[in-house]
Image (cartoon, rainbow over all chains, first blue to last red):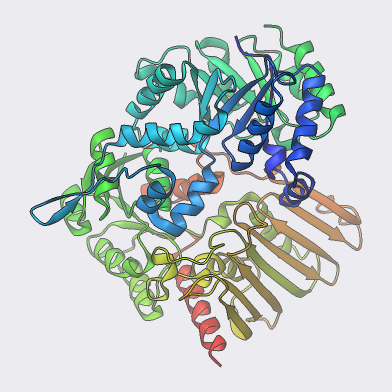
Length: 287
Length: 337
């Protein structure tokens, strides 16, 4: 069972879906790692025990701090979400796909061999994926990571390309190597659940936008509600405030209509907001 | 169901492939690229037919439409071949490197009555659409000045790179980043006809510019500033905006917000005097599949809808893409003065 309340990290890394200007203000406010740790500690003081975060390079510093203060973070869990897409997207523009893999995969994955004067490269995609996962997971060593997520850009890309087998490989690698539960972030929840089920992945953890105004709920609110009511999976709701378009009370009250929702992911920068949202989630989520 | 193919599987091509692949009215039957790495991934994990030669793909697959997302210098021969075979074509931006070649493609698409669209996706972002509508209604009166900007962290270190660092292949901040802003200015405010005071600056790249600064004059005489820099790491990702100043107010527009300042109440638009902030949540175009932004799916939806109805789109036509190429030429010519 996951915690009902999951604390997110968008606010720390200048991700704001409603305002580019606010996102820059956040970048200024959270310039130092200590300012991130301060807000995390405030979240912990309100009783939050899980931090769901991207594998942003600055998270490595936060993990280092946690390892050096074991008493303070005893029992605290991190749900990593990989990869931090912009790191790779900018690298692909700059270095190309092979250049990017070379830059981020440790060792020489393209162990080139020559056959009849032509250079071939080994293209073992599943090994590349596993090595990339290991590289991203390095920063979390010694920290409890019971659920490990694939980020939405990658999930939705694989989904759109119908390369569903990749999900199954990811799923089994995370279970085997990390003894953790695989999770999926998506902007296309109904289609993803169908795809996972078709690969024999049952009752998956799926984190998707769920909000009263249907923001970033691809295909529309109706089919999301149908899946939340009728299908078997472990939903996490994100973007519950629809990037700020909804007031917290009405936003969380809406989530309360779906008893299957296991957890709510949210981010906030002040103790007051954290406390208010957490209390609302505990009040309305009845599972 | 229409039969679609993708040519060029870089970042945009893969994204288009996923969007077309999930489209309820399209069958993504084949992809084409020169990278054996990418093609092998398709061979191993998907049912899509793969080709390393676009001519073979077009000849063999009986496609209704193609999406061309190769490096820019290959647009001309590929699009020409596709149009010649009667295939509706979506082409990534910038459209062409030589306006005379772009003109040939425009004429070809017209002659064969084929749907043609260029990937200037900002026109499928709700806030920019609303800006266009508001300006058309003269909400801020006669226009005085504009600023078109885009900033992002593409090249932030000194090192060589891909085709994007080669000016002969359509690389550089002007083709890659500034083209988006020029196209927005052209379609929302009016066609630029003159460029002055242009500075194309290099900071990290060896062979191409990393920033573009220029003063543009539009057909109707309105002037404004173009300011674009792809080497600004204070931005997490590409951020594009237009600021338009009129006699009765001002509008600041980007992909997330529309900030409207009016000197007087506007009853028709139900906007009060002073500042009003509108958010993308009110304007986002609903899509059935989302990848990286509604706009990427919405532009493909539009293209597929046009292909199905055999009706040419009025948003992002080849002709509009060609005009942007011509403005890029004006800017380059001015920078050499």
